[in-house]
Image 1 (cartoon, helix red, strand yellow):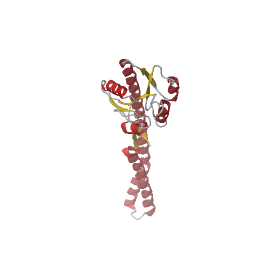
Image 2 (cartoon, one colour; image 1 turned 135 degrees about the vertical axis):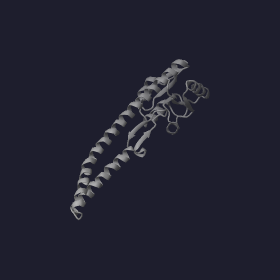
Image 3 (cartoon, one colour; image 1 turned 60 degrees about the horizontal axis):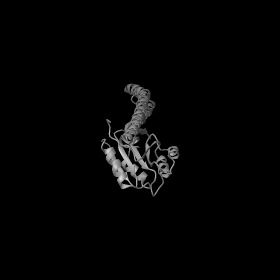
Image 4 (cartoon, helix red, strand yellow; image 1 turned 135 degrees about the horizontal axis):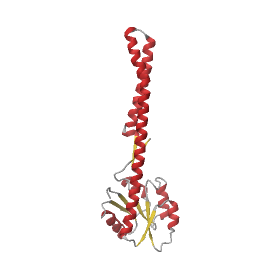
Length: 217
């Protein structure tokens, strides 16, 4: 693949975590593994994964509860969850898919099939983010264009008023209209500045990687 993904592995078995980490890292991706489902959101916020590989039989928190916790903050497009299930697991895969899991891998898994599914979700996630980012950029451009048009009217008033003041320096009404026009220009330019400033464009990494999702606050 032409981009690097960030994979969070949630599994209570050390051997399984090491195996999955080696698998994704062999393809050039970044892996982080944890054994607890309870700490999932804190780790997601810190690590900013692009895909989560989730063992559904954790001792501290059931797979369906972990998925519900994740989906309380991230939807299935923002952060894909691939569940890892034993072939004879008592947990219903269909039920977990209804809770918000995107896909599943059964243990013991075939390496090529597993990595193909992981990279498919990575690709879809990055493409969706790029599309959203392009739409947001288009919205910003349109708003800046609108603000620029709004400047024209008060700017014309201010310029015309200055020309008139050259003829009548003591014209208080003219001074007042110029002041109103300049205040309006100041307000519009402040809006443009705020729109383009990083502080007012929310850069939110729903799942790290090289792509970012930009949203207007």
